[in-house]
Structure formats: structure tokens, C-alpha cells
Image 1 (cartoon, rainbow, N blue to C red):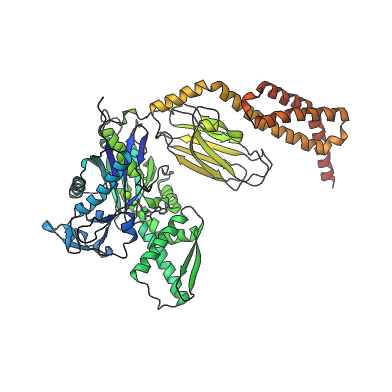
Image 2 (spheres, rainbow, N blue to C red):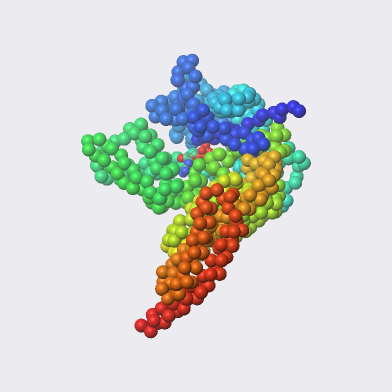
Length: 627
Ligand code: ADP
Ligand code: MG
């Protein structure tokens, strides 16, 4: 058999670029030698014959070499000098007119085309892929914004060629994002999707229509997707938030230490980096502290909360929503007609962005994949379709392996069984196993085996803030919802307190048919011992709760019972307790039937105790009422 041709997928971004590959295991990002997935789209030309500096290093020293460091070159690709006049004031390097009035970059009197500069980035990604995959990479799928015209697309192709890559396909970024989520692969009916892409310096909203079953053999994934409309803002992105934080800090610093304070370009750049780190922090933390040493014993420090940042950026997010409205008008659609919303771009990690986009489209947006990786992953999916490699990746209308959560003692409670058809929904009630437990960890698992250690972990999250209650009293409802595209939404909520938490997962990526078959075969082979282990775990949990309850009741009402009965109960408790202790070790050697019998005997024996306890409670209540 001829080895399938390797084609990589590349997201050539304004701020960051990535390379990905898709094989039997599904799509994945190829990291650099230091394990970093993103490559900043920044190139510094250092006079003479030396090689340009690319990526993180070029970005870190951008302030020291403002005229030699080229960034955001995507804005110039395939455009005329006259077209880019509104971009030029934002760039610190020289943009000059070239032949046929094209936009060129002049660094130290050498003129470069944007294609050449993009080629430096593409070559770096190509080398990165070759090093990681240990084979030659000659072909690529590269993504571009949906609104790119022919000249811009051609410039991107040329950049690829200059980097020694044959560009087998140019794919729209929103289409790639949809492909990464597997949208279109299963759909029988047309779907309308919105792709909201908020990156570092640009915002794009695209409305796509998925046309099912059109071509045979999936050779042209792109033809599944039709762009109905696009809108956006070429000068709106995460960078704005960084500058908003810088401006607010500078304003306060001036207020505190005098208005005459001056800041040079490098200080401002350093502040910007600091502001970006603070912003990223606040996407997961509730507050971040800012400290700046201004010299001469002057220290500025303050705490910025997520809430404050949200209020600062709300108008900025609102501007993107205005663009969404425009795109919807152009597509002649209302938000209700949108089936799915896909989030793309690093800035969609900001919780307020997710919230406002969800509210506008009246649906929970897709966020299971890393928003800054989703375009590259989709490019790799398209690449594998073109190379014929994608055939073995599992794309079924059924859930190939059961989905469940971890319960006490390392057992798995399955909510959705394998071979259920999508969409699928299941809910189950759980409770706590420890008194006054205020946090519950929800660990989502995939697989047929009965114990956590033998299943595949898909992700976990915490349900926090449950009011303190005795074990077994809180009512935690867990809902699994697999939608038609195979995206799994897990929500957990505590009934009394109304606390909720959720996670979104793409469960099928990275499983090949063989893996599923292997996991199934294993589950059959281990069925007996698994069932045994699960049974022992359940018995141990329930027995421990019984013992705890009986001991408490004995303390309250034991004195009123005859001593023969008390001794019998104690003997039975001791017997059952030994099984519980044994189950902490090697559960395989435990006689589960004997364990079960011991538990039943204690249950039976404790009936009189129960009655006594109930009588006592009623008496106590009477007294309380009389008083
Ligand atoms: P582009 O498509 O323009 O190349 P990206 O999708 O890589 O850009 O997005 C880069 C932007 O995402 C930057 O402004 C960066 O600060 C922002 N970003 C990355 N991670 C986070 C995060 N956790 N919270 C908020 N913003 C983030
Ligand atoms: Mg992007």
C-alpha cells in the first residue's frame, strides 16, 4: 500500500500562527521544540546576511527594534499601497509603495513583499512540523479570512510557494473552525452556523450554511459550506483591551504621582505586555493584582477585578455584537435561526464575550476546543480529507463508547450507553458522601469498563458553593447532552441551592475504529472482574453509610434497648466493618456475596433500632411543639 501523502494544516494569523496535522488519532497541533503551540506572527530582520528572527523572540524585543520588527503583515497581504493607509499609522515599520502600487515593507533599505515575510513564518512552521513528525512536509492547506479577495488569496498561495510548500487548498477560516468541530460530517439537514472570531487585532463574524450530502466521498469539504455573509472590524481585537488597561493604569498613576510623569515607548510596551498578562489572568481568576515600581520609592499597586475589567470592555464587546447584527441582516436571518455558534480566536476566552455572544444568538456557543487552535485543527481535518487519510477516523451517528462520571470509590456511573444515537440526553441524581461537603468534583469519563482507572478521562470540573449538609442530603443533578454534532455538554446543578457548573467536550476526537474495538474487547474480557469490583465499591460505600447511621442512632437511643440486642447489633456492625476495611485493599479477593449478606443482616437487625429512633424523634418534636 502506498503511504498516504502528508498534508499539514496551517492557520496563518495576524497575531499568531499554528500548524496542525490530522491522522488516525484525529487532528492535533504540532508544538515547537519548547512545547509551545502558537508561533507569534512576528519577524525581525537583522541587517546583513543573518537569518531573520521569528516568533516569541522577535515579539519580545519588538520595542528595541521598532523599525526592523514586522508584525500584522497579514494586513498587507495582496493589497495595494493605497488600500492600507488606515493600517499604516498602527505599524512601527515602514510601509512603502512597490510595483503596480503594491504595499511593501522597507527594513534598513531593503524592500520585502508581504509574501516574503509570511513565507518566513510559514517556513518556520514547516520546519517545526518536520522536526516533530520526522518526515518531509511539502504540502499544506492554509486558511484565510472569508472576506479575503482573489489577490489576497493568491498572495497567500505565493507565500506558501516561497516557503517551499505546495498549497493544495486555501480554506476559509470559519469553514475550518466548523470542520474542527465535525460540523457537517453528520448533518442530514441543512444547518446554519455563526462563527465568531475575535483575535488579537481583528474581529470577523461569518454566517455559514452547511449543505448536507452534496458531494460524494467528502473530497471537497469546503463545498459543504456556503458563506452567507460576513461582517467585522479590521481594527478591533484583544490588543484594544490591553491598551484600555494600560490607559487606565497610566491615568491612575498620573493622578497619584503627578501629571508630568512621562512614559517612553519601551515602558509603554512593557506595560502592554503586563496588561495582556493581567487580562489573560482575569479570564480564569476573579481578580489580579497590579504592581508597578516607578522608582524613587514610588510604588503603584491596585487590584483589578474581573467585574471591573468587564465593565471597562463592555462597549468593546457591544461593538462586535453590532457587527453580528449586520451579518444577520445581510444573511436575512434572525438569531433564532442560527443552529450553532462556534467561538474562534484567543479573545473569546474572555467570559463576558462568551456570555454576550450566547445571549445574542440565544444558544450556548461551542467552546470545547481551544479557540486559538480551532482554525488550525480544522485546516488539518481538511488536509486529511484531501490526502485520503481521514477515512478511518470515526464519524458515526452513534456514540461509540459509553459516557459517564466518577462516583465514590473510583467507580463509573454511565449516563449514556454506547451505541446510543445522537443527539442523546441523560440525567441522573447524585449526592455527597461526606458530611458538609461544599464542593463536588464532576469527572467525565468515556469507556466500557466499570472503574475510573480503566476508562478514558475526558475532563473534569467543580460544582462549588453547595450549602453544608449531611452526606446524602444534597441533590446533585448531572445532565449529559450530546448534540447532533457530537459535542458533549455536561451540566451539574444542586437542587436546593441552585448552584450550577458546566463543561463542554468533544468526546470523539482521537479515537480510531481500532481503539474503539480494542476498548470494547477489553471490556468484554474484563466484564466479570469489573462487575465484581464495581459491586464491592458500591457495597462498601453503602455499608459505611449504614454503619455511620446505626452508630449515631445507638448513641441517641441505645440506652433504652436491652443489652442482648445491643450486643447483637455491635457484633453485626463489626462483621460488616471488616468487609469495608478489606475493600480498601485488594477487592478481588473479597467474597461479594458474603459482603452483601453481612450488609443485609445488619439492615434486618437494625429494624428495632430504627423504630426506637423514630419514636424518640417524634417524642422530641412533641416536646418542642409544647414549648
Ligand atoms: P489572531 O487570529 O489575530 O492571530 P489569536 O486568535 O491568536 O489571534 O488571538 C490572540 C489574542 O487573544 C491576543 O489579544 C491575546 O491577548 C488574546 N488571548 C489569548 N488568551 C486569552 C485569554 N485567556 N483571555 C483573554 N484574551 C486572551
Ligand atoms: Mg485567527
